[in-house]
Amino acid sequence: MGNFAANQWFSAVVLIAWLGMNIFLFTYYFLIYENGRSYSYTRFILGSALAWARGSAACLNFNCLLILLPVCRNLLSFLRGTCSCCQRSMRKQLDNNLAFHKLVGYTIALMTAVHTIAHLFNIERFYNAAQSKNTTLEGMLSSIGNKHGDWVNPIRSQNENPPYVCFTTIAGITGVLITLALILMITSSTEFIRRCCFEVFWYTHHLFIIFFAGLLIHGLGRIVRSQTLDSMEHNNYESCHDTFLNWQQDDGHSDIECIMPSFQGNEPMTWKWILAPMIIYIIERLLRFYRSRQTVVIVKTVGHPSKVLEIQMKMYGFKMEVGQYIFINCPLLSMLEWHPFTLTSAPEEDFFSVHVRSAGDWTEKLLQVFQEQADNPPSLEVDGPFGTASEEVFKYEVSMLVGAGIGITPFASILKSIWYKFQHEDDRLKTKKIYLYWICRETGAFAWFADLLRSLEQEMACSGKDGFLNYQLFLTNWDSSITGQAAINFDVTIDAVTGLRQKTRYGRPVWENEFSKVADAHPRSTVGVFLCGPRALGKSLNQCCHHYSSLDPRKVQFYFNKENF
Image 1 (tube, helix red, strand yellow):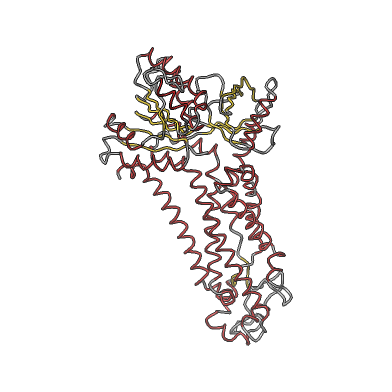
Image 2 (cartoon, rainbow, N blue to C red):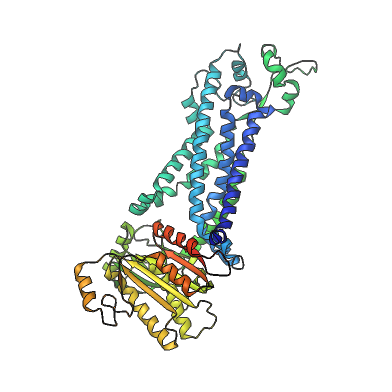
């Protein structure tokens, strides 16, 4: 529980502040439109649906202010650097950017549903009021003003119906476009579609341009109206609404008891909320566009087993840290698609590299193009690098690195950097012990990473630091021939599958045992747990971090970090 509080207290503060702001805004504006005197006549026509529409609109404005900021990757990388002196629990919140982005997105969807349903009721009430005769208050209010004047009911004749209002007014047309764009973005961002048809998610998510353009002009129609202050001085709802048949036009005489009320539209407010984050996002995109225009030189390509392609590149001004990632675009395949890849090179190397695994249509085509054009590889565009949780690895005394399949890539960068630090006898390395766990389905997938581990083994042996790296490889999919070969070579010092000193294990790790061993071996250390892998595995590791951390903050503490991009 003590570790949970140390890890999550700032997350809890952020969520409580965000939730509290939503509740405050909804309640504040709901009460204004439910009880405000200037909306008495409008409320007489519409009822409580007016307050529901405006309360949800306030929450929409607030969340639309936030939705773009978690995906401004350059901003997050900048904050990650400036927050290096802050507490670990505060820096960790930058790793929750996508989770917060999704939370805000779902909240926008919910508030949009409330706002839309409330306004559908409002339009129906406006229509019914327009059909009423002038002998009723609804009919009298509907006849006030003209199409360009001080009206309170936007439906100006009995020939106008609700569909007409929805598809001919600024608020109606933009509302339909905003809702359709949001539905497509939300449905295409489900995990199933992102995994199976990433291109569908990528393209439909760019409908956010239509969404925000619609938001900017949605309020220009000023359909929601309040009574003007001058009018309220001579027509108070409490004393005049019962005498509406005797209302008179204002002729300048102050002795008139109740004059005909006049109304005005509310000033559009949404642009004030979203203008600043839109400017930040535009600057972000311009910076990324400029950086992506830099020439990328492909130094070398290496094909590895299990359809893994290593691409080594150079680009002017490129500087990286361990565990960071980049976006890659191949104009030959698509001018618009950018896909994220973790850097597998070390900062000490004079090039940067990625390992691309065939995991979808785009990566399959990329590997095919590089194979067909081996002598003249296609040009690539690179955007990045961007920071991740793995940058924190050298800030812990002990680190547990957990990679599933191709998820080992960020840790390749870390291990290479360690190898260079050992070669140059860098004494500034705070980390004293690293535990590496790699969970993989195929034996061939170990091949490209085995060379790095073998070099690191030799370097540690020469440096007298054999105990620095403890790595364990877990094979989850095997057949009888593999197990038979492993049994035959049981007494051999070199593993039959990988050629490494550390023997490959079959099955999945029992995390309770692993955490217990680390806790016993480092009773007074701060342990960073880093994962690049599936969500289910992350949940198990996070639970173990909480369970095996000591209640005494001076003893062993586990801090969970997960790659998100």
